[in-house]
Amino acid sequence: MSETADVVIIGGGIVGASIAYYLSESGCTNVVIVEREARQGLGSTGKSIGGVRAQFATPINIQMSLFSIDVFSRFEELTGHTAQYHSFGYLFIATNEKHLHYLKANRELQTEQGLRDVRIVSREEIVEILPQVRSDDIVGGSFCPTDGFVDPYSVMTGFTAKARARGTRLLLNTEVTGISTDGCKVRAVETSRGAIETRAVVNAAGAWAASIAKMIGIDLPVKPLRRQIINTEPFDLVPRRLPMVIDMSNGFHFRREGSCIMMAWPEPEEIYSFNTNFDRDFIEEILTRAVNRVPCFEEAQVNARRCWAGLYEVTPDHHAIIGKAPGIEGFYLANGFGGHGVMHSPATGKIVSEFVLFGEPRTLDARPLAFERFAEGRLLEETAVL
Ligand SMILES: Cc1cc2nc3c(=O)[nH]c(=O)nc-3n(C[C@H](O)[C@H](O)[C@H](O)COP(=O)(O)OP(=O)(O)OC[C@H]3O[C@@H](n4cnc5c(N)ncnc54)[C@H](O)[C@@H]3O)c2cc1C
Image 1 (cartoon, helix red, strand yellow):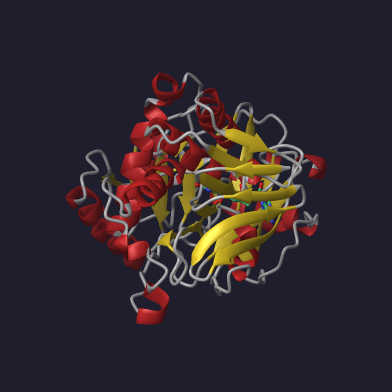
Image 2 (tube, helix red, strand yellow):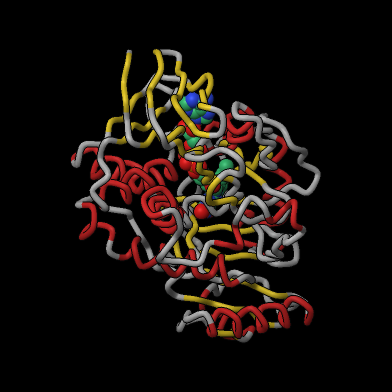
């Protein structure tokens, strides 16, 4: 294989797909997405539970969500494909005053940033939304009806299909093995099937991003962290129209997927690794928390074969790293989304396409997400991490 491209995107997950879509929207179609797997979605994108929310604690995360949720709500019109966006909301439940105060402060910031519908809710309102909840210790919460969920796989394939219809190429079964430079400029991407000459390379390699950055000598602080999901058998004892519900006392959260309930809990003992084995003991761990908050979950049946684990791609301040890589012209970063890469994929695609085409972002001020923030000690603080 001997190819040339204006832009090479490493990684065919939802982030790489969105970048290709926004490049193509601006007329940049001599683009190659390089994916080592036989099909898209085998990285974190296919493992995600698709939660989408603007209830964050920093302006940049709120702005990224506002842009992205607008795109999800118009996805079909924009791409001709469905995102399966369900605006069923996110309900945060507080069981102490500290958490409630935190939700109130976040709500003020979110409103200032332009999120209109987020509101603080009382215990009674929470019981109205979820009558099966154990409410004796609940002091309040927050709810935003435009939050909800999408189908990550559909978003990824929708972005990809539209970009490909405009000329973008997708190379599957092709592993990036190196990046060549002319001193301080990118020259080519080396792959298991030959080189692709290019002046612009985007690292969209998800949890594997640090190994790609290392190819040009950059130490990227992105680490893989296992997250496990359980999926119940059909369960109809909670409402059909259920928001994503987050118990702030321990981070346990759940949502409906069709007739089943998907449950997650950020195991605090998990250590950084590429382990994606599902641990059967996790079912008991999570169901204990589930039954504690929603007693009727005692009736839920779980088949371990329908549960899974995947990788978050974590940075030291739980914010993405987006922008130009230092010291190498033509190398761009779209990494470290933690548990937010699906929901922030549209904004990321837009921002990265603008970095590549115009040298800087125009739609959103992405400066807080620059790689340099770590060396300069400008770390962000996002406490609304799940
Ligand atoms: C259990 C779980 C639940 C989650 N829930 C949510 C949620 O509710 N909401 C949300 O927004 N996010 C969620 N996330 C996070 C989200 O899934 C990720 O942030 C997002 O999928 C990252 O997308 P990506 O395209 O960057 O990475 P990926 O989808 O991992 O894609 C990267 C691709 O790069 C490829 N690649 C790597 N190295 C190479 C190489 N050398 N050569 C070629 N290709 C390479 C990989 O094969 C992979 O396909 C969740 C994640 C997990 C694991």
